[in-house]
Image: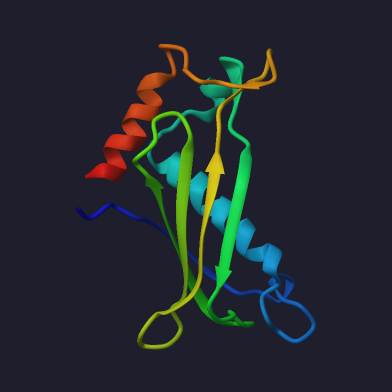
Length: 145
């Protein structure tokens, strides 16, 4: 089964790099989050409604594997998708590529696990309110296609 990916393009700027022109490790995390937020925005996932209902979606686990670095001036691509095996927890998968050469080169793979937190109880929500479940269902449906 193939799964749909969301693509977010960028160019490595000086503020993304260390003194040697290699992308600083924290920058990859920023690009991953931006890709995730832009993906949700494109799917009209109303995060504001989620927060208004008293829930948050913090990252509780984050892992990156470095294959090769990106450097100053290169063009890149973050591909992200939701791992559709889970229903309440959201595991986002990532691949970051250097797209400057003719053949894109894989630079980073990783994932981020987000869990819904009931902000009143300050506990992980095992079930979502009925009002919010359709938002999750639409995400799963989109990425399962």
